[in-house]
Image (cartoon, rainbow, N blue to C red; front, side, top):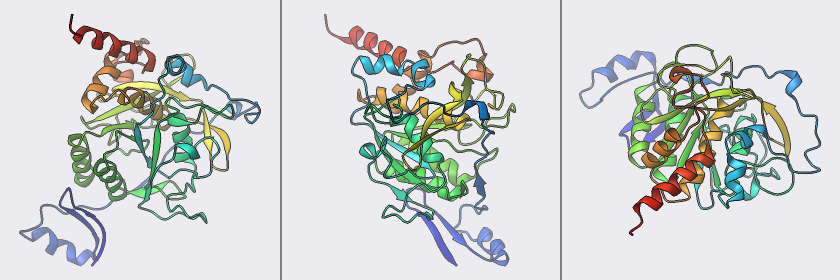
Length: 346
């Protein structure tokens, strides 16, 4: 019997056993449950070829439309950049040498192996995690793009391989790792129509530890929100387009909490390059970055969630499509300022 993961905080162990041993494990009085460690793969919508880059991003810094749409640029003008906040990117890793990210990358971990020759085991060999990271915290450095929270610290938690594939246990291990390290926010641009008890328990543990979890609702265009976004402890994020309509691929349902720009999204890709991707995966980091701006004020995960939802912009999509509405980082910070003024002594 080979042990793959030991979740000390959850009292769960992932092991590789023969099928003939399953019944014996399930019947053992000291074992709470036995379940399959399901393999997951990212399912991204095809990106419209007309949405690819035409500009020279090496010549000057570009402001992606989504960053501006959610009020992040207005927040930056007021000095809000997410300094001191720690964001776990639970994904395919991050390019450790990217010119627009490297200065914001902190410690990382890999639960799957990278195929890249690098001294960083969490180096991104798929590209998804690097793209997500740029939306959260690309540097304000006069080149490329700028992130929602350009001073936040990014922590790569590699749970997806070079094919965008990982197991439920890998993802759960990444969530537990982020919680045990005391990070403020975890971006989970991953999801599937079903969950496991292991992943659910990891989410609940992380939430109780104070980690704010933000996850993609899924790209099937169906009235069913993917896990872990479906869980009460997670902010589920759908995707919008440039005209504030719901992206056709964005899943819907009562578990949707917010929407954010997801089609098309320009961000960082491996090799100090830039590219366009689409999906609720791309919408999610807009919310994580907005949360980082609030976390810089010392707020709890519960307080940040409340501010993001109460300050969201109603764009007329309805609660099943958009939850509380389009995330608005600037409005959330303004709401926080009003609350702080209200509690000041006379």
